[in-house]
Length: 78
Image (tube, rainbow, N blue to C red):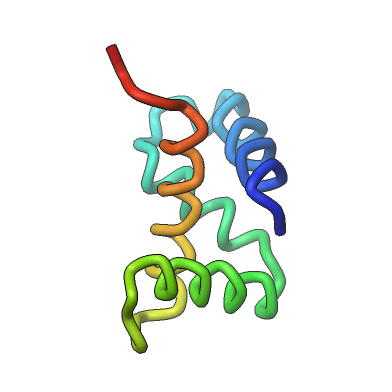
């Protein structure tokens, strides 16, 4: 899953009226829950590599990668 696909998936989930009250981490978790096991593993691996870590919880690492990607795409907050 590319960074662009992550951002689009995140945005689509966030736009859904039933998800408007969720915080960013909950939306990221919904993105990860919709992925295949291989995609979750890929995101977790990329997150751990960015953090220079060898181990981490699979789901939580994938969620963190989604959050990191979305927040990076948003840019600095004024």
